[in-house]
Structures are given as C-alpha cells and as structure tokens.
Amino acid sequence: MHFLVLGASAGGGLPQWNCGCRNCEDARKGLIPPSGQSSLAVSPDGVRWSILNASPDIRQQMLDNPKMHPRALRDTPVASVLLTNGDIDHIAGLLSLREQTPFSLFATGDILDVLAQNRIFDAVNREKVERTRISLDQDFALQDGLQARLFAVPGKVPLFMEGDSVQTNLIGEQTVGVRLTTGEKVAYYIPGCAQITPALLDQLVDADQLFFDGTLWDDDEMIRTGTGVKTGQRMGHISVSGADGSIEGLKGIAAAKTYIHINNTNPMLQPNGPERAFVEAAGWTIAYDGQEITI
Ligand code: MLT
Ligand code: MN
Ligand code: ZN
Image (cartoon, rainbow, N blue to C red; front, side):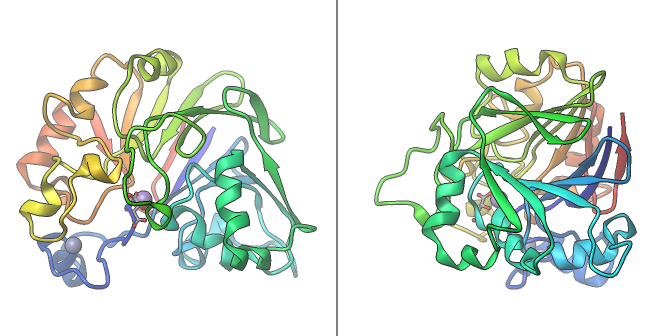
C-alpha cells in the first residue's frame, strides 16, 4: 500500500493567509517547509489513487505531485475520493474536481448530507461523480484492490454548521476514521479525533501504519498564542501532549505512527524544538507535503 501526503496541515495551511505566528513567519522565510491543507492519497499499486479528503489546496497539490497528473488528454489517476468529515478543509477541494472527469465519491450519509445541503456542490456532476453512502463498520472497495472501512471517532459537526450549543465528542457519522487494507498490511487514517476511547484502541490493534490528528500540541495553544479563542477540545481535536493527549493515549499501539492535520501554531513543526524531539522520542513522525510511505 502506497501513501502520498498531499497536505499535512490542518485548515488554514502553513503559512495561513492571515497569521504572523512564528511557524507561519518561518514558512514565509523558507526556514520551515510550507504545507497545504489536509489530504492524503493512497494506492494499492502506485498508479491508481484514492484521495482521502479533498482540500482547498488540491489544485496545487495535484500540480506539485507528478503521480497525480493526467496521462492522456482528459484523464486522472484518481479513482476515488473519500471524505472523513464535512469540514471546509476536507470538502472544498471537490469544487476544483468539477471538470467532468469521472471518479467515485464515498462518505457517510451525514457527510454526504452536508454536500447535499450546500448546492454549490451540485457543480460536481453526479452523473460523472457518483456519490455512494457508506455505512459505518462495513468493508467496501475504495478502488480495485483497496478495501476500506469507516468507523466513528469522537468529533463534532462542521464548524459552519454549528448551532448555539455544540457537542464536541459526538460518536456518529459526522466524523470518521478509515481502516485501509490491500490484504496484508493495515493502515488507519484519522485526521480529526476529540478523544482516545477504549473502542478506538480496540480498533487500532491490527494497525501497521497510523496517520493521526496532530492539530494542536496542547489544548489552550490557540488562546495562549493569541491566535484564537477556542480550546482544542472545543474544536473537536485531542492534543498531542499531556496526560490526556494522543502520545500518551496511543502509546500501546505498535504501528508506525505519523501525525497529520497539523495546525500552523503547533510548536512541533519547529525542526529543532523540544516538542519535535519529544514526539520523535515517543516513536512518532510528523508528516510533510510530498512525503511517500509504502507499507
Ligand atoms: C477543523 O479541523 O477543526 C476544521 O477544519 C476547522 C475549520 O473548518 O476551519
Ligand atoms: Mn480540519
Ligand atoms: Zn500561524
């Protein structure tokens, strides 16, 4: 199974257009690599690809990665697109894929309802791009030779659909993780997750490779850095560090572990910082755009 990281960043990317935080400034200066918004490509053969989340940066991501280029007059190596929630950083790229080339679109009913409720997505012609509702905990073919299964992880509805009160650890169809297998090796992709639950730990026992939510280093990062008013928990994201964080919570998982969907404020993006050293000492790696992983 082949992976290509199209975008390692969370919503906003690195640098984010309106952010002057240290990481964003360093990315503008070329001191750390810039990174696009959240997307991972997966393939059973390195030729036909499935894209997990279509980010607003998808046009540039496809330009930057020759494996994504057309091989004929009107063509794409992309067989399918799968969405893990209805957030803007995961769905807006569909609008750039509207040019009448067929592919399959997979998501849960709740996530497809987000598209149905926002008519701009009708621009993605349903006759060319068939939308298939996927039930939780059922195997399906993401493409020939690549099986997937969606499972609920704690999360919330998309930011732009929040009401006055928001439950941030909903278990349902609105936020899912993906199990991927070509038969032998097993990988998991979970770019958004509010909490490590016993059910999630049970799910991950057969993982060879895990891509996991690395949005924030700690829960009050946005408040502390003056970049926002919400905690990570309020945004539906577990922190990397701390007693309730993902390093601690997932320490028993024997897979190769990679953080993805990383917010531009996260100090672990600094290559020589103590946070990066801590993450790596705990056995994790940090995804970057253009990264290829084969298992
Ligand atoms: C998130 O991951 O929390 C969302 O992408 C936030 C957003 O929509 O900007
Ligand atoms: Mn996001
Ligand atoms: Zn920033």
